Length: 269
Image (cartoon, rainbow, N blue to C red):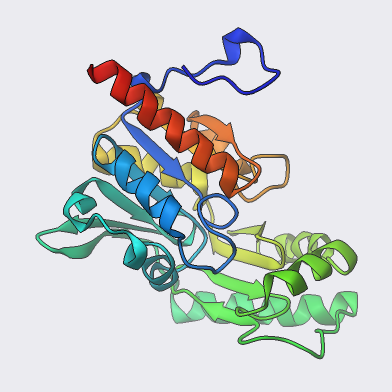
């Protein structure tokens, strides 16, 4: 049983009740846009030896592959790994030695233009001026998701933190975008981003779709994320009915994974 410090006994979690553990990426198993570290690799691979594991993130498939999958040292366990990029718009499974897309909800060219036009109108409406210093592309077309990053896709974490604390104007931008794009999901992501997908495509959809394709019931899953609070980019997952476990940072996630593995080892003795 795992129990947080200063929590009541009834808050303890028996990990043997779950068949799949779903993880957010940035801030949960890796720092923003940074490669998976060796310790997290070891712990996730340990979990993959016993359980199905899903990565559910607003990141693109390419980013997820580079940042996480390429760093995992247990390729022989990839049949237990599910990739759910761009907030549930895509679903990948490792089949016969390659990653295969089982489901996709990509935008048409017309939809992409509608979204970009809406951003341009909103920026004019609210008088938003983009920072003079930016790092990489401000907008990223992820096929099933358009992502706006105020400082660019490659901004250093220190700069993201500073902007988030001092200059975060995303609430005004998202409120205006939602009025112009009622048929789309508009939500903040990370410290500087806004993600747009088709209506109904969010992390709750991701969990339901994961259940449909994996055959694992939602009540047999546990979702772990660092932004499950109101307005956080993990909050939407709660609508799916999946049990959630909030973490503050990578250290919290590592402690959780150790508890999962220790619990499994004791159960098997």
